[in-house]
Length: 64
Image 1: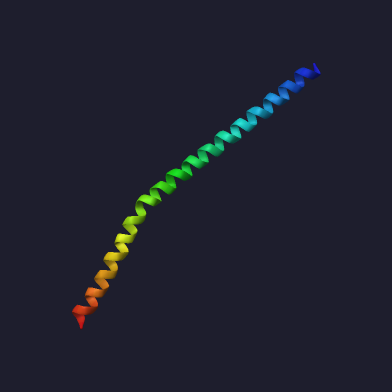
Image 2: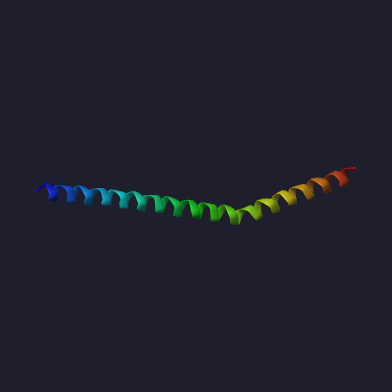
């Protein structure tokens, strides 16, 4: 009986650890998607800044 309880406790501990690892994997996959999306948008943000800078310089020269 005592051996059976120990085995059940060990199985329960392993199941909890498995659930924890699955949840952490999901969290990491979600973070990977977020970082990938941000990495794809980074060149667009740089391009927007460049267009803004060129527009500001052109506006300065045409107003003078």
